[in-house]
Length: 541
Image (cartoon, rainbow, N blue to C red; front, side):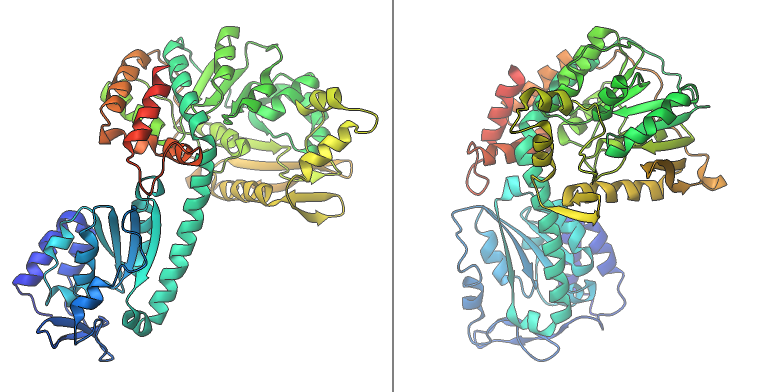
């Protein structure tokens, strides 16, 4: 490998944008694993990179024409994020970067291939361009997930130089699989944001306001008891009597749907966890709160009326934060001003059962058990008896359409998967079940999962932690401080939104997805500033 001025200049430029990759390239002893041979001279007296099979990546007669034609069939009047296989001599990349709406991620087979190109071609202008990124196939998934933001870059395109693809078929297949996997995940996240982002934005701000009004409360959890996590699955019906008999030895943590079911059976939960931000989630809590001793554990994204009602009723409230970018921005503000901010609870699965379980773990409980965590419809039942849907469906029932018809419509609104004669599930419920299984396998507490089957309460899962796992630090603080200054936070937020400050761009990306779905913003052509303006109007209310 030749260490010349061109190589050194390229490494120096790369170090500013990707120090990790630059370090790897600079530490290489040779480029034997490179897919490139020495470049060849074209008829127009330009160096053209060549592969080890002897094929040049561009025409040796007129390589500039190939570079000019590289972006054919892409509408350059719109914003594009383009992923490209093969850095080559960079001529095709330079042409693309002349368009301000273009962002490019170039993939090379490995660091040795990049190093081989760095010896012969000057890429410093490209490497310094903020709209350009470079990675190897092995880092593609991480790089792509970090770089491709649909709300900012609009359209996605993949382009590859055919000779490179023909020489590197395995790498090309790997690239295609990684991009497909990433795009499916990004698309799913984007779809959720497009539907719920406005609700989340509203909820976070109202809940932060409630947080700033909370009085100091000390939470001394009875850690000598078992924490019982209560889901609302049909099998909970069979566990009610067990919970009644063993009430005094349990600290009962209900999910929002199960809270009402327990009340219908004369059991007041010690804590109730809610994460859903939709208006329908408030229906779990329409009735009067009968016990002011119940702790309300609420995601900042959850429906704000729940925490507001709990506070008014005299119940203690413990907020927790998800990884929503607006929550992260508020957390940064709190840290900068030495103010309290809620701890993080795992809500990534989207199921409140896992959130409740994570709360119990972080509160410090060493023995935890789960009831009603079915994630399935059993014996033609969607939920245990006594959920908020029972009175709702009963009120709407007629002789021709009894409440069972409404429950059937609920269960079969999406395609079902049959487990056995009495149990069906769905793709969403299976995903929730998988998330719970993953958490259970990686949890450090002593765990039991109970189901009621054939007249018996049986344990379907047991986990006993090793001695090294028992000394896990508790992350949930036991004291609430009235220290988050919402009034000052809102002033700062409005100021940044009004001035379209880039520091707030990440915080409004979910809202941008919602704005695009509702026709207020077009990511392929509009400026993100229009989303700033809409967020400002929302926050000012």
